[in-house]
Every structure is written in C-alpha cells, then in structure tokens.
Image (cartoon, rainbow, N blue to C red; front, side, top):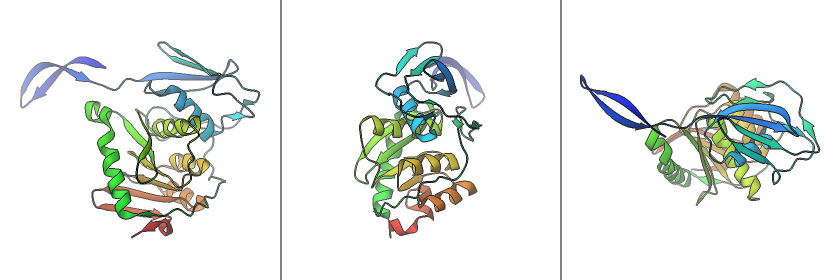
Length: 249
C-alpha cells in the first residue's frame, strides 16, 4: 500500500509517497474453535493455511481444505471443517518475523531418501532467477520470498512479511495442486532456522537453498533428516552445510 512520508536526503526534506508491505492478523479456527493466530501478508491465504496445517501438524485427524471459509476484514478469519481435533502441544513463537508459531521444536522424524542430484551451475542459475522474481521486495524492501523449483523452472513462488509464512505458502500451493515434492529444491530469501528445515523434512523436499546463513540447530536437524542445505548463495559463491552427496561439483 502507498502512504505519505517525509524523505530526508543530504540535509533536505521533501514530501513523498512510499510503498510498504501490508500486514494483517490471521486467525485460524477448527470447527469454530480458535487454533492459532499469526501475522502475515494477506495474499495466498488459503495456501498459507494449508501449508501451516501440513507443516505443523495442527490438526490430528481428517480435515477439508476445499470447505475452508475465509473472511477478509480488519483481521482475516479462517475456519477449517475437520473430523479431527486441534493437535495439543507446546506452541512456540518462532525466530522469524511475522509472529510465526511452531507446534513442536523437536528434530524431524522423517529421513529423506530422495536420490536426486543437482549441479552447482543449476543452483546458481535458478537462484539468480528467484532473486529477480521478487517484485514486492523491490517495491517495498519489506517481504521475504520462497519458491519450489525442479532446477529448470520455478513451480511455485510466494512472498510474505514472514519467511516461515512464505515457505508455508509454497508448500500449501503444491499440496492444493498435487505437485510432488520429490526431486525439488526449496529456495528461500531468509535465515535458515530449524523451523524451515522441519517444514522441508515433513514435506520430503530434498534440498534447501538460501542467500542467508543457517543456525546451529538447523544444521543438526538437516543432518538428521538427510536434507541438503546450502546457505550464502550469492553470485558464484555458496556454502554446502549438509547433504554434499546431492551436489554435483
């Protein structure tokens, strides 16, 4: 959205308009019962909710994405019909922006057996394309982006004020469109934390690449999950932290 500002440059002031990222509170309920709330960019809301429910295991039992209701107002209200119940467990505020929530911080149970391999040149090329795709970041400087790629094409792309939300939107879109995660790379703009690794592991995504750094817990989780994790992907440089066997040098 566009707002009026005062711009200061080299000791002088002038009135101007500036584009800023929109932020809204999202409240998710299951069968009318409050489940969790977070802050997000109000785009691809259905994909975000599906991604969160999948990645965090929010609902124990069957649930229906097709019958989900979304009410756009001052807050975004989402209700999910389900035969299951809201999963009980500790809710942890994540280390990301946007007030994300993680239901569990334990290491992922899933071990990724995907035999896919990716060349360094493929990763460099697709990550350059990814960085050029984020129109909202160029306009506002206030969002993160994420994408899923097969190494040749970007299959899903999303932006959000929260890096966790951007990842969940990509995962949610793939689930809604029945896009398989095998043989794919998740691209991310932000720091690689344990929560991001857990989301990839739960979906079976074999490789994760970001221009930013990982945390110690993210490296430990990625090793346990058999996930290939690359950070500091910038130009011709990158650091391979885990899963070296999938990378063709």
